[in-house]
Length: 385
Image 1 (tube, rainbow, N blue to C red):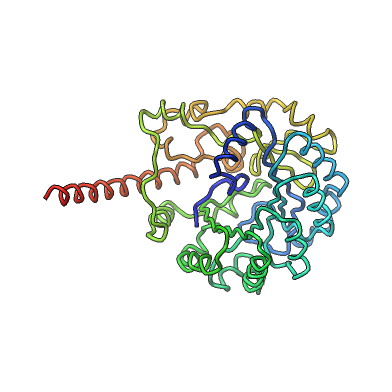
Image 2: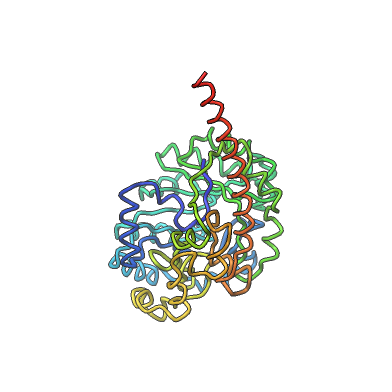
């Protein structure tokens, strides 16, 4: 189990060779990690989802989606440019009848695949076909160990049972199953049981994120009602279930910490492509670099428009006026894209939701550090007696 933030790069760090490759990709601005949203259509209607097409509008959305030929042309460009990790996402990818054709083509072009699915549309045959692709991970969302709570969030009766059944099937085929949980008001009371369920399922990894993203259509109010408030957030972070030890935090004046701390860096070594051909710096940063129906991906990537050039100019927290002197900068994990969606623009300003999380992290850090110092002091006394 771990706590994650950015979905686009989650699960790709921790290996020294991959870190070296990622650093080189950043220096050369190679699109190493690409998140390809094949569709926004879905067979679930999760209450907090940031992108799903409402029921009744699927056919209209389907007509606008990139075709197989358009997608493979983009994949050709990415392969030639050094793309490596390719996430196939939705919506629900399996609602596309050509999903396996797209995935097979990507595999032939040498991409390391991550497949996002809600799991309820998996059959034995589909799981066998996924196994043949040998993806890095198959990633599924799980919201509760209580079927009623999970199904209430997905708004599909029986979705929990189908998900669990298919997790077992995926594992039986030797696939790395990656479970992901968004922590929010409807499921916060059930997290301990959910954590134990993840252990019992013996999945590759299980991550928890406490951020509910705004909808890409600009609706921030509907998803935000599920976001934890400050008290709930601290209670979640401080729970003994996570057994957190104080993590190293950059020390010194905020101005110095801000110079050392890099921002998330969208459009540097990755991007997001939506079902209609728009290329964005990352999943939530919805200022397009262009559209692959109008211009080849490689041309879009090498000639970003002025708003993206402005984004690329921000490398550290010191490049952001409100962040460079903030006392929470060492704990902050701001997201430019979510900030822009929440504000309706002005992404350089303080990301208030990230600030709330940073404040909770700082308080917890101080409590844990004080407790650790107390233990060390007691150990020192025992050693000298």
